[in-house]
Length: 490
Image (cartoon, rainbow, N blue to C red; front, side, top):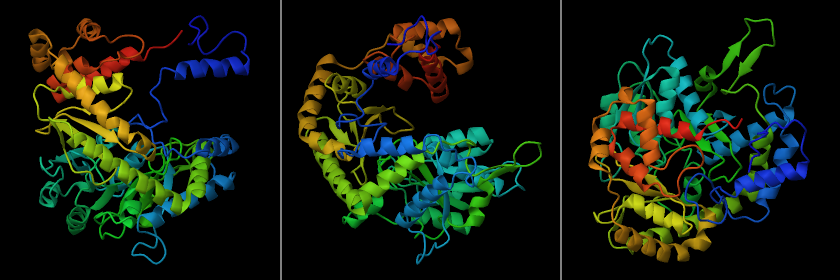
């Protein structure tokens, strides 16, 4: 643990071995990043030696600065190679209908999406109030982009059965001020692919850019298609698709954080750049949000792609596909659980039809058994659900998951649903974000076991309260609860 008498900055420096021991001790409290038991946040291929290769490549370029590509041509060469690989995989490059694709490497999917919105907004300086059209299943990073960039967000509902937006609803949401229309391939929450071709067509008919958020699936869907999966068109082969994002730190299995934002041609990318010369320092030009960028993540991603190759990714996709099928069968085998969508990518998402089976309690019971899943709150008629991001490393664990899920479901039924005090539920349903006070937040947090230090082992009560709260209050509670966890060590 961190020595609270000195924090991160002791008076006298410490031996390297002791510092590493401290970090390892801190890491012992983390969720396991390897081993196939964590179904969110990390992407583990289970390939021996890959971590060591990526770490060595990272170290080789950790101090290289992407601020000036003329000073560090090695980084420029690797970035261009990553962009080319992503473009070729996603229907662009020589000999395709999108031969002039260009792109940039970013720090992650959120930065890629923010830049896609920025490029679309800045391409229309004539609009005082630009807008973007996004299905409600689109990633929350689009809302973040709209907030940061002062762009209005027009949400489009999804069908409660198919979990997809209708192209007609997207068309109806487009206004003269719309600068960007979004589709997901797939949506993160449920793992279903939006009707990209239809959405891109209505966007093109309106003269609006169409961004495909393939951050999650862009590096798996092409391989699954090669394996015979019925993957619908979603990439640059689709007329009207003007940009695509794909995260390499997801299913390309590169270390975090590396994403690629692609544009169909250089003219579409141009507004993404920021250049400034009206000061006495160096002339600034940035293709992404950051100025200084470490070459470490880019080199690690380059090494990962070079080492695995097409045959490696095809093999990993096949293993993952089989793991998805096995996990889906495990869900089907438990009475009271139901797949929210038939898997068509690398997500297994399920809900509970049995009122005696509280999904949030089920998640806690799985955690107690060493399986770490991601609960998703009910939203706009869609039920609460459990999300499993499936990676290749999960495959050896599939046979263990079925019995664990059945045991956890039995334990959740025996425990019964979470019951919050009626007055607390009434408060959650009636409070406005503005009405929250520090004392009220402190009391709520204490009652739920939240405070300084790590979150409690069981989160069912917290999730139940959040689900009972209206969306705006839910957001404020999340901010306040996480704020309680993030306090400086003096």
